[in-house]
Length: 60
Length: 330
Image 1 (cartoon, chains in turn green, purple):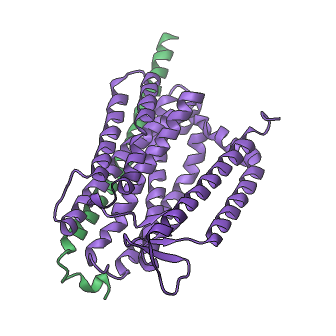
Image 2 (image 1 turned 30 degrees about the vertical axis):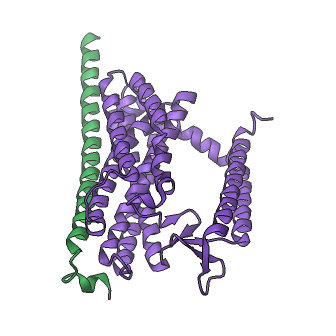
Image 3 (image 1 turned 90 degrees about the horizontal axis):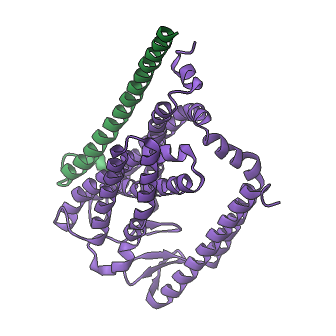
């Protein structure tokens, strides 16, 4: 009997689902956080470079 | 002569050392086997079951094939190290080339990760139930890869710390600090999934067992490294401090790994089901576990590359090539 056939009856199902759900939430959450971080860094650097150029132009 | 072929020579020496250590390991296993051997498993002439219930595979053929494999790897790596490996490492140590090269690798890493994960999960959920634990053993397909990775991530950091201290390569600092948060998350998840598995099998969520406690210490080490890095404003000083701390705390890794062997039957944690060259698991259960293990390794590589690319941009923000990458070049 495979796991899928025991889905409704097995008493340990809650433990299995809980551990997979926690892992999934943390891993996917961390990937999203890393993507957001990358985007944030790029935006921050673009702003910084533009501000530096503006400052250089003003000085010149 | 040595300066010209240092890559080839050092890789060959490392592989010879690994091969010798592996041979010693097999010899020790053989000596132990004579004391504890109780019966020969039917149908497998070189597979034995010990009094501890552990299944050990041993044969002279294993030893010879292992040695030949190592010689083969030695020859291949030795031949190609100067032409391909050393130039590759040289290129990866330059932030600009690292950023460009890893950008090309990322899509492939994600495709491999997802494919392996889908295959591993399907295999894990369709494998037969375990004789004593029933269905709950299926937590193994995430708990064990996470636990292995928690140690592997730290070893990657330790190597990066060594490279950073000895050769002062900037990219080693970047890799070191990029690994720490993902290592901390994998360690945390290994502890949580272990607790969730522990309750139905041991009857308790947590016990101050050596394996569990040393894994918890590893989590604190990761958090300590992240905290230490954030306390310095100057990133070069921060990287140096973090590299030293990482190398000092590497002593915890063998404690985690060998805790089961040291304590024997005094520990609540079960003995290793899988280690290099042997397994007490059925193939139908083992293959999904190994596939999931590789899936998590590729996932780790992909996330570390993503984080390190952001870190490279931040550190090299005054370089011309960064302006080109961000699309704001003059």
